Amino acid sequence: MNSDFVHLAGTPETALRHEDLVTLPASAPPAPWRVTAAAMLWTDRPDDRARAAIDAVVPKEVSAGATPIATVGALIRYLRTPVGRYREVIGAVVYRRGATVFTHIPFIAVDSPASVVGGRTNWALPKTLASFDGQPAGGTSMAANGDDWRLEATPTAHLLMVPMLVPKLLALVQLGPHGTVWSVRPSSYGVARLARIDVRVMAAPTLADWFPAGIHWGTLTPRLTMVLGRAVWGSAAG
Image 1: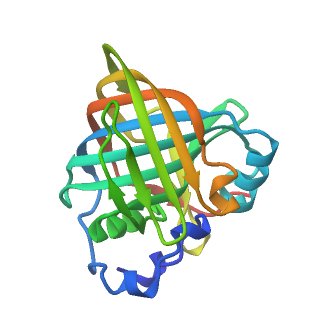
Image 2: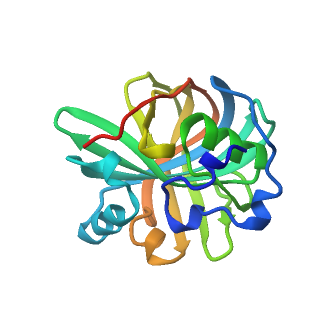
Image 3: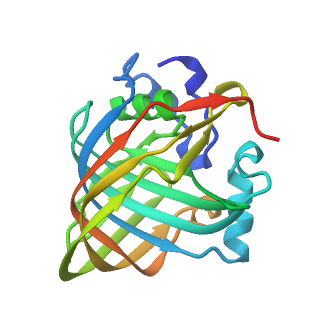
């Protein structure tokens, strides 16, 4: 992997260890990526403590002039991707800047070295390596484990299945190498069930103070297709 992408803005939990670096491939398939997955996703509204913790880990080039209006957690099992099957955990922040709403991901971990490289080099996502147990399914737990953190979620899903469509409206904005701001507009479609999700987080305040833990309403999606195109980038925002 190009050394420019080793140190990307993210929570301390996303830092790549030396022993991880030696496992990474030199490159990964370029965007666009089309993937299918099973996933659970939930949201929360940040309180004062969460907003302070978010402020500490999100670069000003991304957050300047914007207000965090929601946090999002997700556990995903990818069934088909350009780098094969893998699992992922995401902690994201939704911002509003004037009439514009966008998302930023300061925490993301996977169990695929090739996905680490693909995420970092295609979209400036600070992916790191973790281990996982379980899968996103009703009544069972799925957990992600790092060196000094653990996240676990157990969904209880309703029976009614509804279609889900997310068009390319919400930009994902990340800070890339050399102070460049990267953005991409993912799209997704599938079917989902409303779910009550019990989330437990054992981590340092850099993650635990803002990641949406506790009991939340969200969705359990047995089949989801997502498309992530090529990122566009430019100078850092003021």
